[in-house]
Length: 429
Image 1 (cartoon, rainbow, N blue to C red):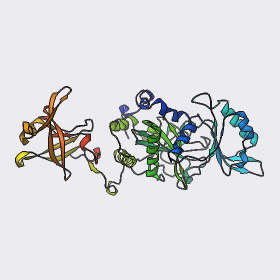
Image 2 (image 1 turned 60 degrees about the vertical axis):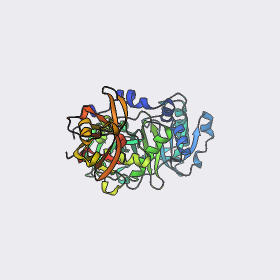
Image 3 (image 1 turned 135 degrees about the vertical axis):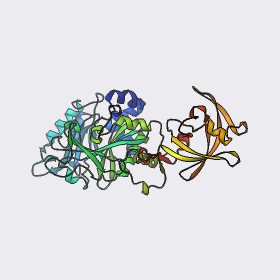
Image 4 (image 1 turned 180 degrees about the vertical axis):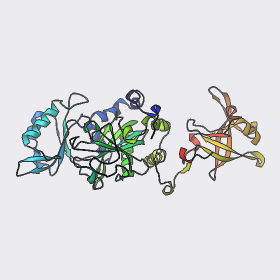
């Protein structure tokens, strides 16, 4: 698959363009796992159960580690890239220690030492006053169990304007120390936004994979559990935090479903490698789209960015191509046939002046009002009735001299494309 350089999102564009959409207040949720999870919990968005927060060295000594009922994770409140995360599966009474995901035993002194290092800022990324978070260890979902030996997979979803844009599942490895982090050697599989099935694989940030190491098991076609709920969870997190551009890292709990692991106001760019697709191109396509609600946002994502999307199961939207045949009606029973261009770059629809004249719509008695258009001067606004995909629509349009003599009789803007999803693959004209 060929990806144009202009479609790739680089770090400078990410920081200067898209991350700049986020307010300072919203960015704080990305800087503090603790703050983000507490906030998301209040908004009824699932996160891992919290067992303890350690703020001072004295807290480490007095915390009852053995009282935790099952596996748990110890992590810094402001770390990144999996730094400082220690995941423990269970307590071994015989060996008087906790067994981590690789089978290594950790004594009480080991845990206290690790927590002390976190408080001293050894793993901190944001700020200089970290806390130690002790929370529930999320078990591996059975659907992914055969692909992971160490640690718990997670799904990262990139969101812009509350619409999911791209996703990947990250599978921990022995090399990554059981952490779902590509910098440390985890495996990433791009995901088809339409179906939730994996598309491509990459090990770390370099090696392209078609099968899992040492096997003939394909990295393609693995169904991600709870797919629609995963996307909805990412959208709800964006709604709650106010992050316009963000990455949501989501655990897949076998019984509880999707859980937010963390939100990131500066998500990494390697997701493009896993999907073999440019993130910038996708972001540009939805910059001016506003989703009505969570369900609408997910359907937009599936339709625009799905390799395969089961349209026949979705009745709310009509899928159209960028160019469609239309019949336009005028006064005294007049009508003409022509081509309409779906122009989502403009808000108001427009009809060519020649077509409006032919239909009798440009007569002064039919003018609703006039308005100034930059570069074109004053243009009249008229009521237009037309048929698109068997549906009769009545709307108001600008009468544009610029469109006269062109290939398209009308340009349909965003105001008249509600209920439609434009799919380039369906273009036939």
